[in-house]
Length: 261
Ligand code: URA
Image 1: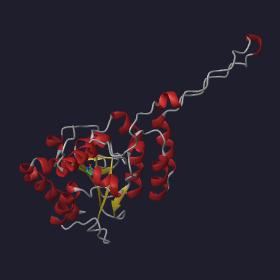
Image 2: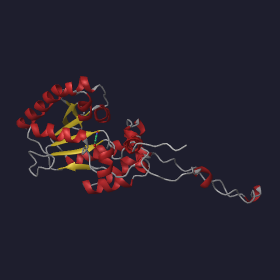
Image 3: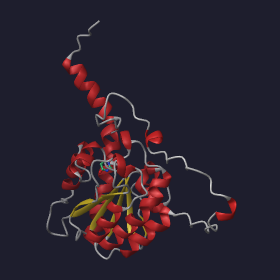
Image 4: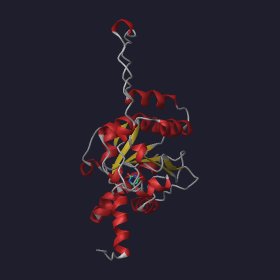
């Protein structure tokens, strides 16, 4: 039986699959990678007398300690980006199209930290370029800020906790955040903003160790020696437009702090 499928339905199904992270056509038949990469069976077991002396077990690699050592080595943003992009232990890198480091002006007084790239960001290699990013740009413009501004007083600098898109836009896992945190902290140190804005729960959890963005938002706190302002994530605002009133209050709070700085 042949099904006459509506091309619009096919397009919608493909889009849905891509949203879930199934965005590459590999082949019709499945491949058992475990079997393919299994080591060949040993030809013979060596007699006991000839067995090599036991080797001391290698210290297990600690991905977080390695991230800390690498991040500490970076003296510039370009070095940090190169070291983070090459960091091998975060599985997300395998499924991502692009490494998404940052956008905006590193001389800006304001640094914004989001959660992780989505589909648009993954495709373009830049943070906050999809619908949430467009809303963010409009929100910033409302208080005279612009990620493309060359003037540090009007500019912003934007990065995420994770530089690779989690499949299907799932939440970051604690182990992924723990591995990326040393890079994020070094990122903030190297930019050295006057004010850090944390957008959403994941950024608050990473930097402040706290969740509960609807309670935290608009309340200044301090981290890494910087004034920190938690704000609602623009993706949350797209889903909950009534919360834009709170976001507007937070933006005014930010503007007031910048005017006083
Ligand atoms: N949401 C984020 O947290 N970061 C992005 O870059 C895009 C959407």
